[in-house]
Image (tube, rainbow, N blue to C red):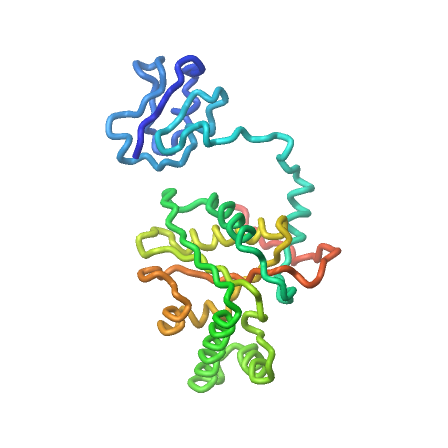
Length: 273
């Protein structure tokens, strides 16, 4: 998994990297020398970059995480508590989009940001599918409606109350599934991902949080997700990679409206033990 590279002219032998390593595979040579991996450490290294990131001297590098590719944190860009709270509270699920599609470079940039979301074991197995063909997106919405029709036919009493409303809206010409969105992004992970669904949700959350900074809005496409979970035909039509049981679609576009206030939420229910 790669070895450590130590700049002995910068290293202070303070063991910060060894103390921070989540796998405890870094030690100081002979107890007070320069950092090195323990025997066999390369096989269990997570390639997480903690050792490179935590060194205040820029003395440590990793074959797969060169220190020159790890920029120093710009303290002027660190947000304070009030900024973070307003930013998070101002995030909205967007369901009405401008007709203009987001450009490929912007979506690419958001995915590049989202790749920094944590993954179990740092496996980084999340993949991305981006649909910008309006006809294809409409087709997927239609297949979700077909799935909801089947729910109403098989078990009308157990179908969620919004299902008949969505179906009727579709029949009247209004897409309440994907909202005529100009772009659809789908994150997915293979069966090999130990916590694949968590990895997917975290990646999409990063994508969602970064989107407003580039003028885009998002909405989790839960109705399409329901169809994808229930129908192999829908999964194949979407083009999900084979062997990817973990997935979730997200609508992406330029919001029609601008929001000006921060709605309140219910107080959290907390149990202290």
